Image 1: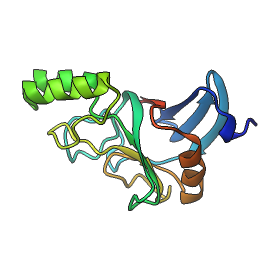
Image 2: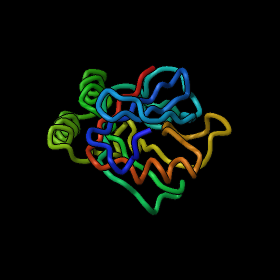
Image 3: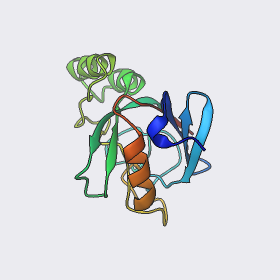
Image 4: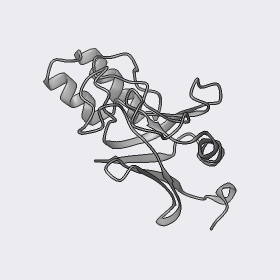
Length: 160
């Protein structure tokens, strides 16, 4: 397998149903990790506190070496799709919607404290069962490897 230090075009795919996180370099599959999800793993994230892991297209907006769950990669949730739904369902204001859209378009951190939820990360802490608040969790040793390999800006697709 190709060394992580030489990834030219990294991207991540999370397959919720299969509980797998795949690392790709372009179209080439590099590695697969087993992972777990939020405590209510079925369906797409709807609101803060529902325990669901969101589905859709995201990017890594930050790397946190001081995470309380070992290490973490912050994902750009809420994304534009969630913001559009939130505005339509009166969960967020037009100002919150516009702030999310601007942040995503600028590849920055979207607002993390809305009724849609936020603070969705890929982090360590173990894979014993679906236990997170909506994040993706790996074994700590695997999170070390992933954290070293994945730069800010890496695309992440979370599939149902």
